[in-house]
Image (tube, rainbow, N blue to C red; front, side):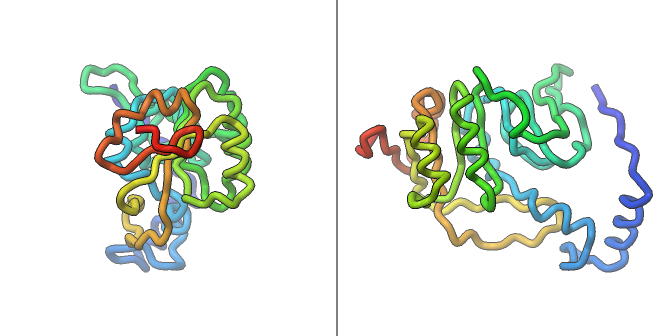
Amino acid sequence: MAAAEVAKSPEQREDEYQCAIMCGEYHHADCPVGAKLRDCWTTPSWLTTILPRVTLDPCSNPFSTVNALHNYMLEQPEVNFVGSPSGAITRTMHKGDGLAVSWKNRTVFVNPPYSAILPWARKADEAKAFIFLVNNVTTTKWYRELLHNGGSYKFEFDKRLRFEPPPRIKPSTNNRDQVLICNREGYQMIGDRLKGRGRWWGEHMGYAD
């Protein structure tokens, strides 16, 4: 089942023309196309392969590989859905604000914009199960908000994650450690899937595995 191509505006066509003139293997710093892609780094695909299917990814982008039924992004998705070889719809893509949709009774994976995590942490109390991928910083308001909303399970990775850049954005090193923070229901979904990748800390800050 093929999705209809989204028509490009004159502005988009001009941006692509300028990109073709100034850029080589990677987008130039002043490239208008590249500027729109720089916030589209994605969760490592090895991790999204391990994680279970969820009903909602409210912080998606056109290049995400998170296995979510509904994916919300601020950009216009290039396709409305991603289907399986059999033709069944497996991932539906939406243009919209993931904070504005209901998380009630949903299982949610959130890799939030790291410059503004607090609104997403506050929203977590709506979800049936949540899994947040965030920096390992315990002195912030958003971290306390996640704890308040039931995020009492934390997974520390053995190795620093390497987020995946969008096409033609130059890769860079990650200078922060990331963790997964989950509520009890989120931990029950993924606890056994991460063995050999790090360690879990449970509700009372002791080992959960």
